[in-house]
Length: 301
Image 1 (cartoon, helix red, strand yellow):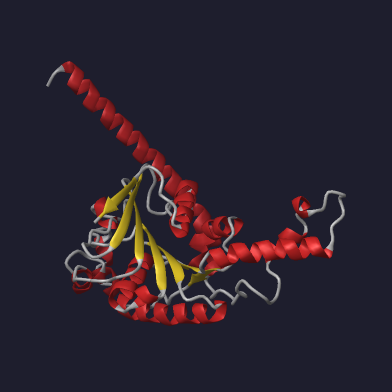
Image 2: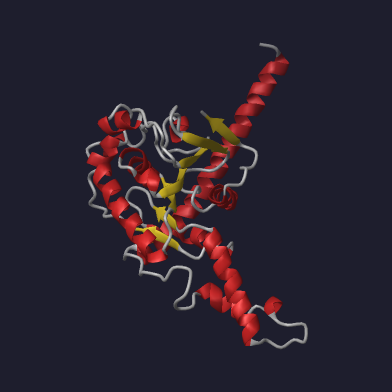
């Protein structure tokens, strides 16, 4: 190897090591913050009214105090308030309800920042679902998800929802859509660091039934490789080159010939950062509105 080649390799390794260290520090910061918020997400979320006629939402209140909605004379009238509320409801109608699913041994508090981001950008019905920490079967959790989706559709008057799932949450959503007929109710599934082909991480947890289902070659993983002709749901899978819980990291991609998929590679962040990183949040919003994803998106047949 020439001196030039050796120097290039050494530089590449140094940059890689620096990125790993930076990501590890960021993960530690996120973990600390998440442990602080975790108690706030233990209890199930209270039902919130959907968009449309009914009690005013926080967004409505914001609209009613927004100085940009005032008339040119500086006064604020009932007509202005009605107009602002109508605009907000029009925005709400353009966005389907979003259901957020957390990962293994986690709860809905992991989505605190993402929920705030979605609501800020016009989503008025965003709900985070806590599934039982005692769940021992992804199939059962997927069936419960299906019942919850039906409830949301009934409450909001919408025919379909979108789902964002972190880690195990994405796998539950995919099983519901691909194996239980959920593609009639779910337009888009966005997964964040989900082991679509199984992960070999944390071998000490293998005795847990759900962890065994997330291993490569498990019965559940084999089910997800079976044909899924006509599946109508669009999948967007975010995967990171530094995701320490996805072994190998490419397992967070979806590679299935019958599914419509965008695999989106994220660089320089770890597993816990995916639900809270601003760039990922922007990509999620693009995915949910059907916009073309930014650089890094990869089409998967």
